[in-house]
Image (tube, rainbow, N blue to C red):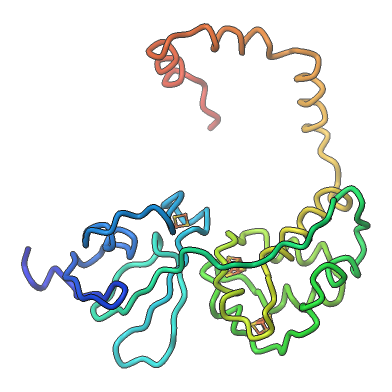
Amino acid sequence: MKKENTVTVFLMGKAYRVPAGLTIMKAMEYAGYRLVRGVGCRGGYCGACATVYRLPGDYRLYADLACQTTVQDGMYIAQLPFTPATRAPYRLEELAPQGETLLALYPELARCVACNTCTKACPQKLEVMDAVQQALRGDIAQVAELTFDCVSCGLCTMRCPAEIMHYHVWQLARRLHGAYQAPRSGHLADRVGQIRQGAFHGELDRLMAMGKDELAQAYKARDIEP
Ligand code: SF4
Ligand code: SF4
Ligand code: FES
């Protein structure tokens, strides 16, 4: 491969020449890493591949998803296998959808110093600090709305000087909102009713009786919604 088509990256401190244009994740595999942690969907949805890096001549520490970020020459990369964050114990059915619920279970929210580091760290470009402020105000619906696209990568939590465990707070807010505040879906209720009455039993039995090849053919021939 021509030298101009490659870049040098430092993976866990060791230099590798890798093809330009690869994602960090693919560059790691090209360099010989077999990923058993820090990888999942490879499509930017699961949040498993949180990665931090620095660029030459730039003082900032960047945070991103390895499967969504292209390598750059001189990138100094470390993957984070996991961000430890304790989820508060609760039973959703015993909680009230009140503003105080978030703060009662995650009192560290009150330690936010409004530095906005969490927002800058978020690879999903979410307004993370705003969501913390809404959580402090007790607006569960706003927290759920602002964090709908959170992939629980933990990068905000890793960088927060107030030790807030953001993604657990978001999850609680979305659960409370979904269980108690969001309008009920008539379509969902209808479909659950149909399932309970056995409307799909015959079709399921037919699929269960198929061999692997027949199943593969049926899958290819299925109706796909436009
Ligand atoms: S990083 Fe932590 S302290 Fe800073 S704004 Fe975000 S939640 Fe608040
Ligand atoms: S809010 Fe935090 S955990 Fe969620 S995607 Fe953004 S950085 Fe990751
Ligand atoms: S591997 Fe799932 S978000 Fe990167």
